[in-house]
Every structure is written in C-alpha cells, then in structure tokens.
Length: 234
Ligand SMILES: *Cc1c(COP(=O)(O)O)cnc(C)c1O
Image (cartoon, rainbow, N blue to C red; front, side, top):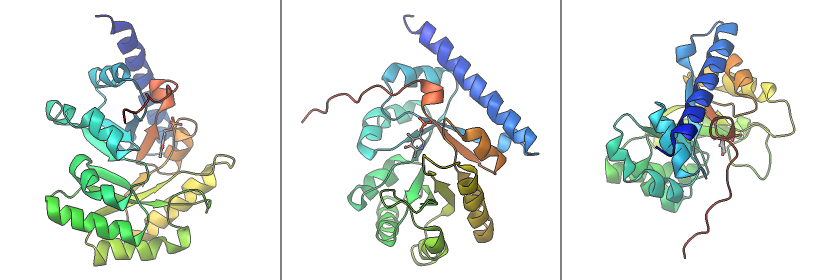
C-alpha cells in the first residue's frame, strides 16, 4: 500500500477539520451536525481524492464541469452516497452537463443561467438543488448577483423557472474581514426563508460557522496546497 502514509495524513486532517467545525458550532450554540464539510477537490491529485474517500469523506466541491466529469463521471457509480457540488461559475452551454453530474449547483447568479438550468432539468429529469451566489463585496471581477438584486433573482429562479433553490453562497473579498459578508449572507437567506448557507473556506470556516454556515468549502486546509494543473490534452 504505497498510499497508506497519504491516507493517514488526509484522514487526520479531515478529523481535525471536523473537530474544529464542531467546536465552532458549539461555541455559537449550534448543532455540529448542522454543518457539512465540503471537500474542495479541484486541481488535487487523484491519490489525495482517493485517500479522502477512504477516510469517509463523501461531499466534494468542484469548480469546473469538465474537470469534474473526468474525475467523477465513472467513479460516481462506485460511491452511491457521494454528493457533488458545483462551486465555480457555470456557462449556460454547460448547464445540461452540470445538471447530469452534480447534486447541488451553488453558483446560480443570473436569469439566463436560471432559464438554462430549468431547460436542462426538464430535458434530463434530474433536479439538483440550487444555491444563488451572492457577490457580497460587489466586486466587478467576481461572479454572483448583488445583495440588492438577490431577492428578485430568487423569485425568478423559484417562481418563473421552478428551480429547487435551497440557499445562498458567497465568496467574500480576500482583503476584507469576512464576518460582515457572512452576516450579510445569513441575513439575506433569513429574509428569504432559505435554510442553506454555503460560506467559509480554509482560512475562515470557523468564522462562517459562527455566522450560520451550513456548508463550509475547504480545499487547501484539507488536501494541502493545490498542485499546478496538468497540461490539457488538445
Ligand atoms: C477553491 C475554492 C474553495 C476552497 O478554497 P481553499 O482556500 O483552498 O479552502 C472554496 N470555494 C470556492 C468557490 C473555491 O473556488
């Protein structure tokens, strides 16, 4: 078993993350079971992903449809309890592929995408849960709907498109303290009556849990530094 060292290390890092999440939840008077650790496996080598599966991790986040298809397409069948979450921007022309592969699409951020997802769901018969991505810092280069427009997009998704919208997701600006962004997202979700809050990454997941995160998306703190992507075959 050449991998046993890597497996132990990864199992340990998952266990340690789980206990930090649980401690942050208890501090905030929340049930630790209400917080799900999403392992962000984008650009991670296969052996680390295998080790995470061996350690019992079942919820994974990927940010590119094509990369996720390559990694999970065949493997899905072997892991019935697997849950795959799309956490990166989605092009409308990939909506159908995304609906086929993912169980949750966290990055619905515009009417055109909502309509494409509705069509893809009708065509495939699959209905992955959807989250609306909110650009809480209103950064021009970042995906997501503005906080002001969130309610309107939610109504369009739920009422006009019939999407199963369960919650909100955000990626705070790197140079700002994240707490205000988490509080804003929690407030928006509360007003819309949405139960799912995907927020918090390697550096700030404990803060996110204190502000009500139900899903924390952790990459490097779980798997280690992302290695450079393999060259794509043309
Ligand atoms: C890469 C990524 C993460 C994980 O980031 P880390 O800092 O490695 O934990 C979380 N969310 C999104 C949307 C990402 O793209």
